[in-house]
Length: 40
Image 1 (cartoon, rainbow, N blue to C red):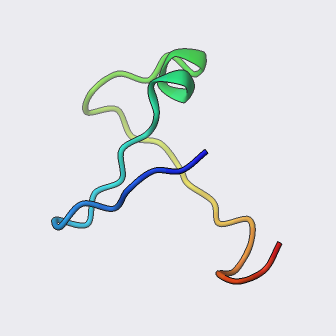
Image 2: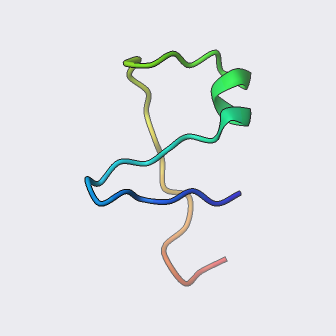
C-alpha cells in the first residue's frame, strides 16, 4: 500500500489501517521503517 507525504511533512495513514487499529484524530502512534529506499 502507498501513501503520500504532504508538503507539510505529514503522512496520511490509510483508512484500512486506521479502522483496524481504531486510530482517532490526534492520537499518537509509532511508525517503523522496515526497509531502506531501494531495497525489498
